[in-house]
Structure formats: C-alpha cells, structure tokens
Length: 155
Image (cartoon, rainbow, N blue to C red; front, side, top):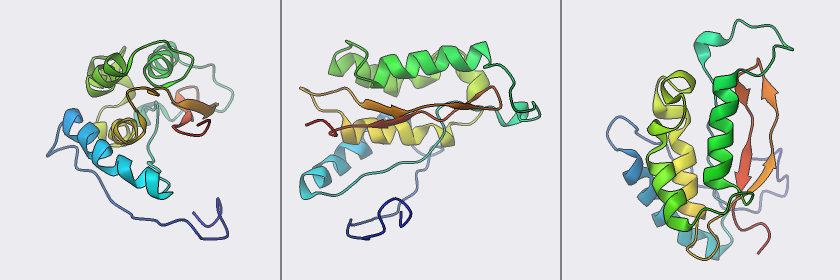
C-alpha cells in the first residue's frame, strides 16, 4: 500500500477469505458488511486475478489472448463495469453465480483468486450506482487479465 499511497494516511485492515467454507453469496454479503467503511473514507481493496489458468503459464510473452479468457473478461465487464446497463440485481446475481460464467472451469480451477471480486462487488455496488469504473486492463501470457475495477470514483 505504501507504493500506492506513501502518505500512509488511509486506514487498512487485512483479512483473508475462505472460499472452502463459504459460498459466493456469503462473500457478497461480507462485502456488503464492509461497505459502510466507505462512508468513513476507508479504501476497500481486494486482490485476485480476473482470469488465469496456472497450468497454461508455459506460453511465451506475446502469445495471443486465449478465446476462453477473453470471453470471461467480457462477462466480467458486463457484470461489473459502467459499460454495462445491467441492474443492481442482475449484477449481484451474476457475481454470485460466477461459476456459471463462460469457461468457469478453465480460467479458475479453484475459486480463491476470484472470490475477492465477489467481496469487492458486495462492498462497492449500490442500488442506485451498481457499476464500477474499469480502471485499467491488459493481458499477460495470453490468459491473465489484469483488469481493475473501482466503485465510487466518479461520485
């Protein structure tokens, strides 16, 4: 965090998720429980990976983007970003049912790297402002999306 904010003036609480004990709906609710911290000028950051397949990491740099990874990234943008016209409920339902997204079994063989997106969606989505701003993206190894989303940046 120091690299992002050298002033070190933002409260930080570190926590971990347990995707083996709780399902996606519980993680979305965890995010909703954290949401009031936003009103106290607390930055909520989650880390994970939008798409990746650690078994596919043997491809050299410059490899074209895998169709399965791109298809999932499009689904994720539709679920989270302001480029989508989905309602709060549609976005929430989609985030919770992420294992039904295109190629779910390919891009995340275990949910630990993606469950943090569900927590972030729960913390960031609001009924009247459900969309996130996609801050940046980019790809690595042809299948690792570096998409980042933020809620509340334009409000």
